[in-house]
Image (cartoon, rainbow, N blue to C red; front, side):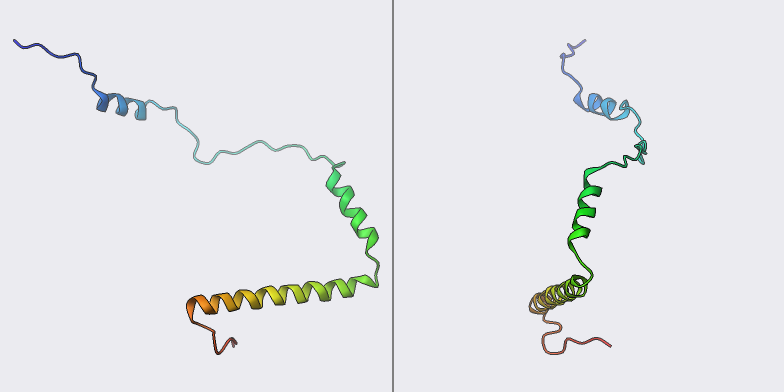
Length: 93
């Protein structure tokens, strides 16, 4: 008869740790929190609206439109440089 060495069986221990872990919900649903109507961000947004008059609104819209056109054109230029598509013809039908 031989002597069995006291060596830990790590493979079985790792398997046991994987199997005996508590089951978790793959789609956890958190509880809803009640709405708080007196939040600071609501007060701040109303203050910004007071500063903008009716005469300023069309100018603001033009500025926003110009900014979006500028950012899209620069993004298109970068895309054209990286891919090589749209360098010479940059219009879609």
